[in-house]
Amino acid sequence: MIVQIYGAKTLKDAKALVNLDVDHIGLEVPSDAPDQATMKQIVDRVRDRITTVLLPLFTDLDAILRLVKEIRPDVLHLCNVDMLSLDEALAFRAKLGDVRLLQAVPVGLPGRAHETDSLGLALAYQEVADIILLDTYAGDYSEGSTEIPGWIGVTGKVHGWALSRHIVEQCRKPVILAGGLTPENVTTAIEAVSPWGVDSHTGTNLHRGKKDVNKVDAFVKAVRNWEAK
Image (cartoon, rainbow, N blue to C red; front, top):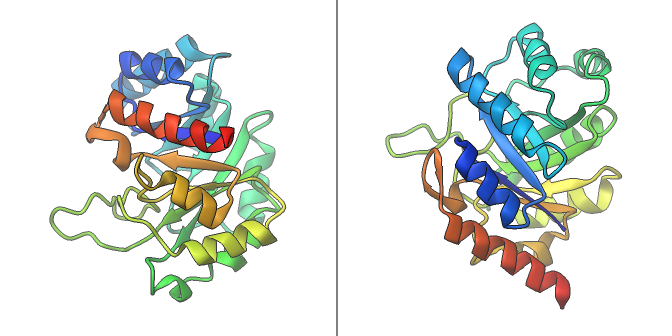
């Protein structure tokens, strides 16, 4: 079971994730140069010890390609609500070379999952992406919400796991389950969905931009203990 942890903003946090038996480290990268330099430093220091996943928080494809060539991550994560057309995605994928593509697919909240054709999107984009990530899309940008307008995920909320299970069963590409996963519910989620991997961001944060090492440790141990059984 792949464990992917997002939200590391410092080299110290990144090294802690390596030491905690995390498989993938997710790195959000804004458009400003100082933060991009920090992410490059992290990728350079943890390369060959953990799989690095880069998530640009901007949509200019040429700028994203330049960033990928500069930082050289293992995986590029796209999670814009306005998804590329399949033709655009195919053309973009061809320019990534050896960098794998992870495509986020939105899944609605429990009781609202039917409002989005998540299965159709997953089956379509598996023709382009190397990995599919199922993440919660709530569309809640009210005060106190952790969601970033225009992006899939960062909700701290679970979605309709029954639909996610159906997608996993239908999809021939590896599927990572994200959305509101914590040390307390991750094994329940695994049993409900049977994904290839699990992802945590908000559920293992001390606060946004700072990982809670104890929560990450508990999350990883919960997954590994489940695997051992």
